[in-house]
Length: 268
Image (cartoon, rainbow, N blue to C red; front, side, top):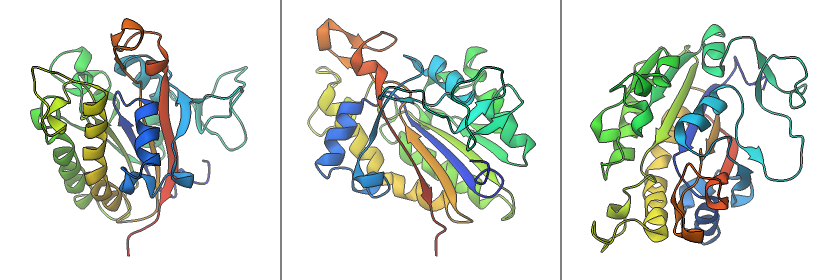
């Protein structure tokens, strides 16, 4: 990462609330053609989330604690704040002296941009401004929210505008929180109803919706130079397993998340 930072653009996409099992099943079944084309071996890596809900997980990720590989560790990290005794800081780790990765990248000359999705990014109250406040530029509007059936398309369109407005030589770190997987997601499955509510099947349909449009995001982020992309979930969610519904709980469906990182080569 010490070679990547300063050379390439950086993209962090959190597919908010996406479960690992659903993501893995869809990739294996060929239902995520655009994402799977970039996943090493066409498959997601199984990892453990650093938090059980959006705010906690993102605070950890912005401090350098991305989802941890599910196999026994320790596992060296891509990014880490400098502190004595760290067992997951290695030679390839980008080590920073600021409180968070966002400000560290800004110090290295990156323009930092947040395109928010769920309520913790809506800037409509003090708490909703904490995470976007880490970035030099941040965007949120109702069309990006969990209530919009076209949220991801609207978010990608904003990213395209941001990229088009930057000088070509300006390095970019762009973070996008995808709200489409989060409840309510019933409207992504044809025939589903508000009355019936969300389910594992509507969750899967929401991921297929994201896959249909993510190619535009990848194209925009690689339109100027090579881009290092991290795509992962911040936490999963339960749909009745062991009597649980939702997240912010210590359940396998919440703690286990899909993860991948890869390079997006420059567009022709």
